[in-house]
Length: 209
Picture (cartoon, rainbow, N blue to C red):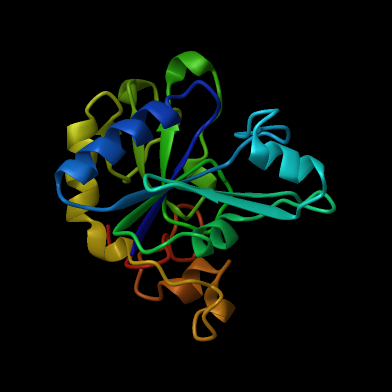
């Protein structure tokens, strides 16, 4: 399974790019899943429906399925903030998992940035960012040796991802052999080139750029 994250501020175009990449990877014959960070009060259920009534009655989890789809809804007893690795562990097998949000996750990520948002960039200080997708490369506030992708060219981004697929092989931190390495890019990718401004490796899986 391959995993890649997409980070960027609200309004930068993350969801649009992820949506386009899902379609293009599907056309290339891949099974694609998405992990999405949401706000606290999101709800995909509908009041009055049986599943909603079961939840309201106190069910911890409700699984609802038909011959077309399946959904599982879990109500936490106390507030929780599951991380991307926990959510990936909930998924069935897929060829690619696209993770939207979770900007500080220890996953290889593409940063989405538009100058017009006026937001700062993340790539100078995040060794897990492996590329930047932008519509304004000339406005990047700091020089970089990272690949700079055209945010408006989803075909080009998909082509780049597929060419880089080996480095996105996912190793779950819940596997005993991998747990100690997470959170430390240098241990996760000992052959990577140094991160910008530090002596640690710049990515987790395979890291020559």
